[in-house]
Figure 1 (cartoon, rainbow, N blue to C red):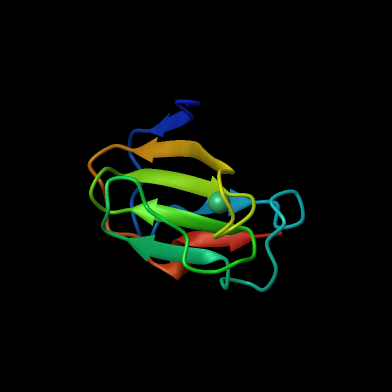
Figure 2 (cartoon, rainbow, N blue to C red):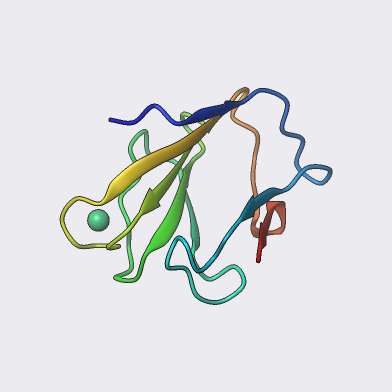
Amino acid sequence: MNTGDTLLDFTPGEDRIQLNAAAFGLTGVVAGVTFLSADIPQPVTAPPTLLYSAATGGLFHDANGTGDGGLTLLATLAGRPTLSAADFAFY
Ligand SMILES: [Ca+2]
């Protein structure tokens, strides 16, 4: 699996993760973000989605949602900060 990037000092409320919504197939401002506690999060919806594992700090993109495969680790957030939808910005 792709090991992604490592974000060493992400501070919720101060920093933001900026993503190109079209490039990731995401629609809606924050609709594509799901926060889960599993080590390897599983998508719960069919569209492409972002998944954040509070257990590992892993931020994943699943290109086909609940379809088989498609999961890519984008980045690992050191310290496993608690993220909310407000920590993401889409353009
Ligand atoms: Ca999938």
